[in-house]
Amino acid sequence: MDYYVIPKRIRARIGKPGLSVILGVTKSTIERNILEPMREIWGTDLVGEINSQNICYLFGEKVYCLGAEKVSQVSKLRGSSIKYCYGDEVADWNEEVFDLLKSRLDKPYSCFDGALNPQGPNHWLKEFLDSEEFDIYCQKYTIFDNPFLDKAFVENLCKEYEGSVYYQRYILGEWALAEGLVYPMFSREKHVFSGEIERKQNSRYYVSLDYGTVNPFAGGIYEIAGRKVRKIREIHHDGRKSGRLDNEEYYKIMCDAIGDLPIEYVVVDPSAAGFIETIKKHSRYIVKAANNDVLNGIQEVTKYLNYGLYQVHDSCVETIKEYQQYAWDDKSAEDAVIKESDHHADADRYLIYTVARQLNKWVI
Image (cartoon, rainbow, N blue to C red; front, side, top):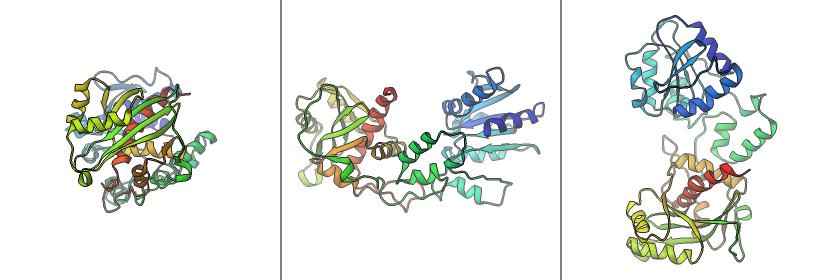
């Protein structure tokens, strides 16, 4: 619907003083979520490309397209008057950006339209929408209200988020609190396998590690075949129970666990700079710092669990134990996990979000 509202808003204000702006989390999300679909409807003559000055010509008007994740990215709006702004993924913005925008919509005809997926009920944007200070019209939709989505697509999306807080938010459009277990869909019947593990010619093998000195040094060996990820060996050393080790000793533990398996590369907690350098020094394995985007990583692991694409061998006892204990911090104002029983869960998240997600972009 927005792809028809945006041109109407822009055309109604052509020739009037003020800027037209599109704000998204990043310029690339603006291109993917807004401009590309609009070109399919209106064509390239009416919907241009974002140039090096962050300007895109839309329906005869110069429109600034800026990322709203950081306030520094929209600093050029300070002192500017905005006549129209469209906001994409508003709940993912920096709150300061939103506050800046409110002060710049200063014309009698100034208007803002925004779209978002809800987050937690204590989110700053929820407080704004519930306030009576501004003239706000808020519409709520579920995924089932969109008649243009293919039925199979909707069913797959529901399956991806089934049993998680993301189902309430992204499917039902609710401002839901992240509480209880992070992965309530994890079950021994579906996600734990047993038996002898044989090396497979068409599989790829990786190592993923969450580094700890007092906290456990945790992770394992992973087999990826097509879209499926299996944790076949667990690596675990608890510094509290068994004594602290140095990086060379951790490196030996890792090598012993690998044995003669051909490892594509090792993924390590990005904060473990010293251990990463130790691996590089030995020149035996390629090492990469993991993508430690916690919330997006948890979403990706949720999809793998719901589709049955992640399994763990029954010998990985610490990993299985953690999945049954890893929980959201329901006392936090923002989405946050309790930093307990999370070490193997973190290593799994590194592997799935940093490696498997990238590989599966190319799997049909």
